[in-house]
Length: 404
Image 1 (spheres, rainbow, N blue to C red):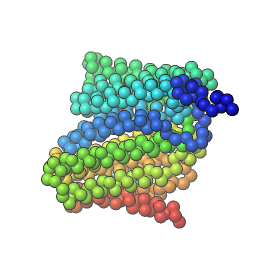
Image 2: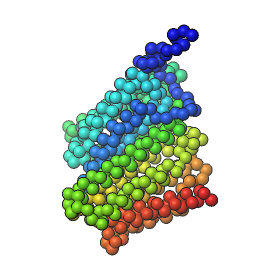
Image 3: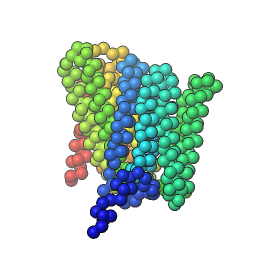
Image 4: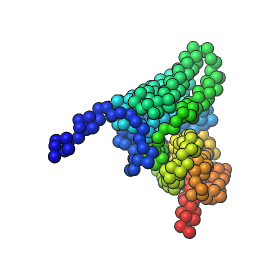
């Protein structure tokens, strides 16, 4: 036995540079890497920032004014995370260049998070745009490397690089034209929508030449982990509300009811998400991955918005807020209803039979949306508790039906 047979080659041991080639779509035991998990942690800060801003708007009775900025910033967060996730599923080499470029993307997330208050409060999108562009340019470098080192996928990789780079020029141009008032302020949202559509079209256009080798079970796990992150953000937001309530009148029966109901509700939504066999469904219906992946924007945004709603609901139990009780309860009910509806809609095209019975789910959504109308008679705490109970009953009905 030689030394070579015992010790790994230096390049394999240190992974300074590994040729970037597509990973197998049926690679066994494919799970999220430690780098991906670290990458996700930076998004915790960004999501926390955008959730906190929405919670402030809801508490100040300006919920409608806060929705659009929230959805815009959350789009940047979600799209940057999603693009990295699908690229990593195909080309994760975990070598030094890959890690360094991932670190650059993480730095961009932090810059974006720092700019959220200015965007929400003063319509100042400079820091958010700069952070977003930093993330995206690092991804362009990853795609260029994939195109250079993998001739078989070169056209697809270079299309990705060109498409992402051009859209970043568009975002920069939008920022400059708005700052110099060449474009009036009212065009901010229409131009954003145009740019967002162009971003969404890049993967579809790039993969017209050849499809990337993303791993279905790896993608399903990554989306599941991001769902858990967003549920964790809701716990953090509720904890912030607890702090605000304790600074007011302290612990009360209403406070305890809302706090416990919030935890039960988040646990129920977690349970419902992982009832769906996403990995197997994506494996069998790879051609429908665009719909599945893109539609998760609504699921993720609903969970982030729910965190804001729960924060305000808990906080109002301790002291008076400008927002009405009806607004506070709908800030919880609407995200839950959207989440449940999209959870069914996203998975329905991928499976032969829905795991969650559509009739039960529809009933749950309708009841959830009607419950806030009773807030003047039963109070905020009872409404939040009833919403949580409705989701628990949906789990019970689904599990009972599956055991038959």
